[in-house]
Length: 106
Image (cartoon, rainbow, N blue to C red; front, side):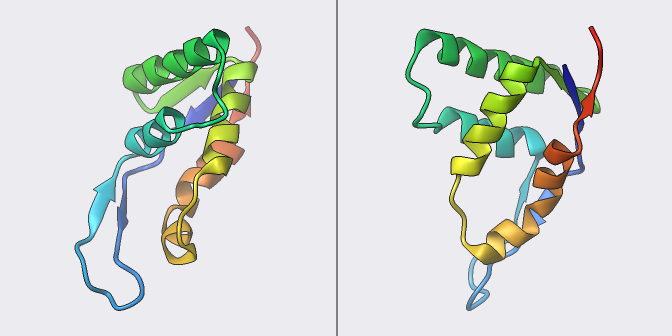
């Protein structure tokens, strides 16, 4: 099992010409968007895993605990996401939190 410390929400600021509005993106929303749009999920088993990840995110109170297979599926979904480099740089805290997940024994 993996335990992820949920980082504080990140405020994403516009890049480039600086036009547009800043938006706060909580960790749960960040991960949720990626797993909802993960195009490689094609089997009922994967759909159940994604639902399980959603449930874990909703139940999170400072940490998210996932089975190893669910954690790996979540990471794969996040790696498929595409952002402009300026936005990705602002979200690095979330990627770091996921990479620093702690192994725990059942």
